[in-house]
Length: 223
Image 1: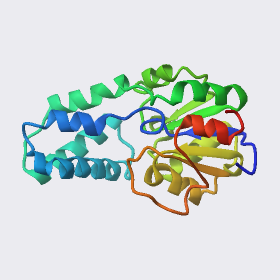
Image 2: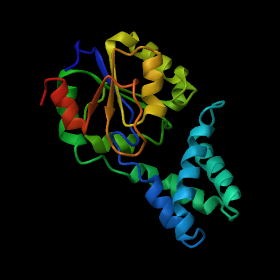
Image 3: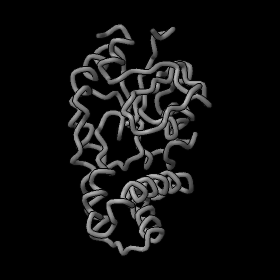
Image 4: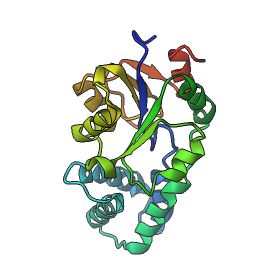
């Protein structure tokens, strides 16, 4: 159990709350250009380049996806273009919450303000938030912060917006690299790994681990 009742529970959105379908769609989209034996590497390289692209100066998320895709295609010696980017970027608002999210998130939100901290754009995230059917206290985008996670600036902007200090906040994510490492560096009061099995295990960054948002509600004594 957490050692305190957080003032806010903050969440990563894509991957943690929303089932982020980028890998599956990438496999489908490039099935005719990448041999099956190389597809895992192609998907992994695209993921790695997306992380690299958010570490520099802020640019729109469509450019993050497009530049990462161009670098991956160049590495693998294939052609790609605007049609591929349109397909990948256009699909993002259509992806739905994980099955454990909707009822459990609503339970939490009735008792503790819930906040989204998302590597998204102001006009891109609303369909995902609506699909979760929970009364978010605030959703903070990378566009507003002028920085993407895992940069400290994104977290600091959220804290400033909330008028909170890290020790008052429980941050929840399925990603150590994008969220929990930075939340640990900034000394968030609790850092909860929501296990979605899309990253290797890392120790020392999370204070708690749950298998879904229903498990988080139980951790908070709201199950």
